[in-house]
Image 1 (cartoon, rainbow, N blue to C red):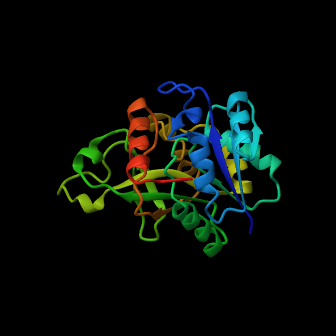
Image 2: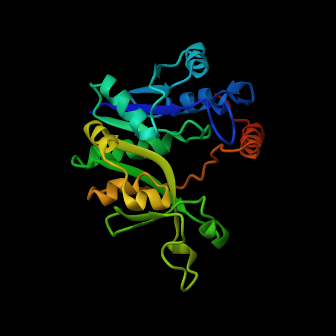
Length: 245
């Protein structure tokens, strides 16, 4: 099996314009993501962008990059466009372009899941939530799974209902995905579904169409960059821990 890592990276962002190019201790954010992802067991990593500035930046540090359409409404359709180009890969790992502290073990755990389960269509990650404040935050997407670790539901609301305030029952969804190449193309062609629209969670489209999503637990709680404050936090972490590329 061959595994391709794809990093969607849009220049336009409502909360932090140009964030793929944001400087983090001397390197752009997209370089941090790309090079840390490249430390994993992926066979190849490529950035998918619709912006010439991001395209040029990736080339400047020796990365692989594909210019994709500006018409994509979400990351999945952008991934599917790349899947149509890289036809000799079996599985695609979708890595968020705004998570410069991505750990290679997170990617490798998804890779292993596809090696172990030959009929697996899609997989993602979760980690334990440490406080009820995190549980109640709608920006933290929660996930519940069955006994075989397949997703039952994803929600911005607290699930399960906090009747006994048992914090051990709560998991936050981590937005990194693995897909069979043919499945992500099929997924991108599905029409939006009612629960997906209601929760504004694209992965619900998969469940509503009767497909399964494997959800693996990870110990890593990485900081994504959505705002300037997030960016400052990541810079501080990298500096204090002396993390280098």
